[in-house]
Image (tube, rainbow, N blue to C red; front, side):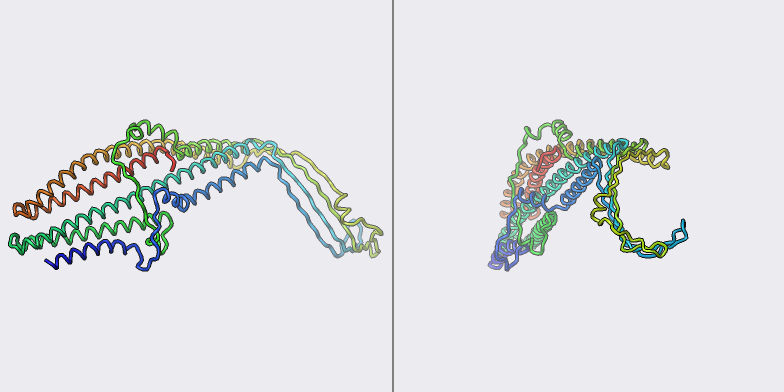
Length: 463
């Protein structure tokens, strides 16, 4: 009897300590930081890989938009050249040799602006603006997806903690009954077979508790990975809090399936992004169709050159000028200006334009298909989530009655068993029924909260 009491005391101490030390270093000097749901979401939205990559896509789309704007502006090009020439030149017009040593400077400043590009620049700008807006909306939706994923993992950890509590209570019930059976065996009221059966059941309950604790640890590691906080000491450094759980219906918010569908079709940022992709694809068709039209541009420029002889011999006679303008004067006063209009029309471009137009039309058709598919997916997801939500409400109500009945049956059977009026199998069956009812209830409550969050997410509510 004393042995069993000591065993029970050690078990009550060991299991909580094992759960604690599996997460905390024995040498830890400070308690873990507890992250609430909102704080956890903020960390995820800051660190999540999907958000970081989509931000880069938005920045890339911004660069493409800047380039599209730039095509309406004149360019400005400066070119300069310096050369130093030494040697003999045979003048073929006259059979003489010219020998010189000279420095040559050249520069030009040119600018060109498109007057008419066959609507290419306008269509390209429109498509770029729409693409930029689409990437921004996609980033917004990526944040939504990260948030709901984190919420799901957060609630899974809450569920794991509740299941650990339930398994701990179930183990304590088995330990107490094992003490009672030991006493009854010693008193001759029960056979040792009952004790052996209970010891086997206690061992199974201990294993179930260990599995529940390990599942909690695994899900915590998974959430830390999603937050990109999975450093060497992250299990010791971070803990996750809880949120209030609701088990009641909220008809004012989740009572009408069709209303939620309409809200999603109007407010979902990802659906808006798909619509912008359709519009951008339409403008891309016009952009490539511009290849059939002529293009006109205006060009202006300023040109200059300077030449300075160190010496010049013509037919072996010195011809170096007595006076030469310096290079600075030549480069600022000998300027030649030019302006002109250039028109081009590619009559046949080896089907380059035609193939691009065909590809653009195909992409436009695919964008419309994707947009329609996303509408269908949104409607299906909301209907599925709404069905799960209603089912969870029914399960909570049913499980509540089941827990009450299972608790009464277990208490009654436990009393009958201690009086020898029921078998061990009978009491074990009622204990398992009570355990299952409690587990089913917490599953349904957590699932209801998750479905509420899912419906918020699916209808476009911002996190």
